[in-house]
Length: 208
Image 1: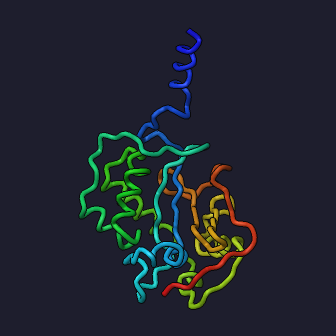
Image 2 (image 1 turned 60 degrees about the horizontal axis):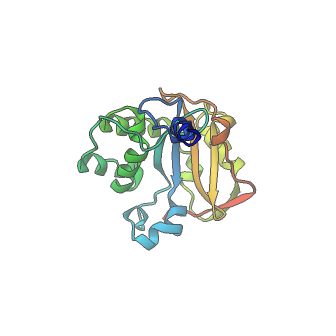
Image 3 (image 1 turned 90 degrees about the vertical axis):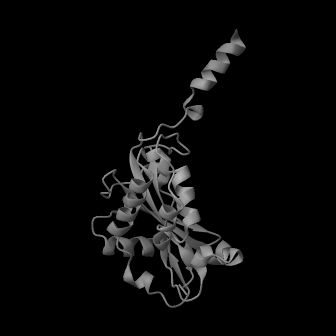
């Protein structure tokens, strides 16, 4: 009987519960610094995103539904999956149709939206955030602290606050800028588990 009770308790635990599409608290718009990704992974994959002359700076990694603690992923949804055309059309801001498909599968299904509406919302979120011109026009590799990148985004987007943006790095290179937004895409403070700023300085490879 004790074993049976333990089994039921585990099945009922939040960690094992199925995330429900449409139930979340806010979004994180994740903007990936394309030159860092290309150096770390994309060049070896011969990714179109990394072709010389494209001069990609920030690209959309994803629009992620979040809880005030943790996040949903891989939700079940009655919404149909996007067509190849719909994922391909997101390549201009996300770098590739493959990433668009992956983001829909892992995060988009949890929004409760249809795929076309999720992609439209992702595009609207990206359009709502101005990329700081000095970063977009970077013409040489530089080393910067996270605070400088945050301040550049806040200057370009006066509604943002320091609590609403976090800067991540990987292997001492800028990885992503993550911006927290309400469900109607207004800036808001990030929950504590989303604030993971880099410490010290990191490399920002220049777009090419």
